Length: 303
Length: 41
Image (cartoon, rainbow over all chains, first blue to last red; front, side, top):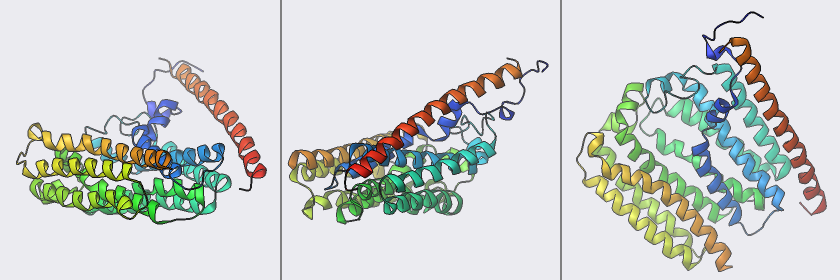
């Protein structure tokens, strides 16, 4: 074959690093962690290899969501600074490869979950993938300011799936864990979308700060932090966890509400003056990790 | 970089990773089978 100069990287077989980047590994870490916690707080422990496989399937399902999301939003990603360097908008991969990779990973994760654990867990995993891709990415995100509110349900599935993978059935505690992540998602994403508002506006995505303005978003952040805090301490109040979790959840949630109140008091319109929003966003990630870590500690130390 | 070299480099890298993943999958399926048949799961 004659030597030809490299002019169109997307025409080449995709580099494995770009395939990995399609799965959004950083987002996956939080999904894996909450799924693992759901599995670890369950009253029944599956054999180690089955527990490992359940978490692997949750990770692969999350990776499939990331790939399908980037396949569908390649045009939008190209318009935002934060996402312009991703494999598809940067032209390092063709869209069809991303689609095949995402669909293949989805089927593989769901079938493996069903074979290794149980089909209720597999059905929940399939539902979470379909919800994220069809309901959130395709339907809600480009259409309504409530995209994050309803779409947040997709990210709330992992602890539920982890629990069901271990036990084979649902109960009150994993549903409360679902509620915590569901209510945590709006303040988490709206804090981020406040200081990257210009990105979302440029891409034409109707995020709340773009459509309703910064002050309305700040009010919503504070209002959502209240039921989120209530949901966080509810497992303790209902006697489903011990005092270790209850005390830590109360303190962590109190700090969250205080930071949300500081966001509410802020009047800045430019990202440079949005220190409270950046602080709340960073804390919200720590909050979820800490809350679930304490939940596991409570289950294992209190048992 | 020449196109031909880059294509071969990427194909080799992907083939190696795919082989590793397939090997890991076989091992995983083996242990899943042992766990599912050995205990009442």
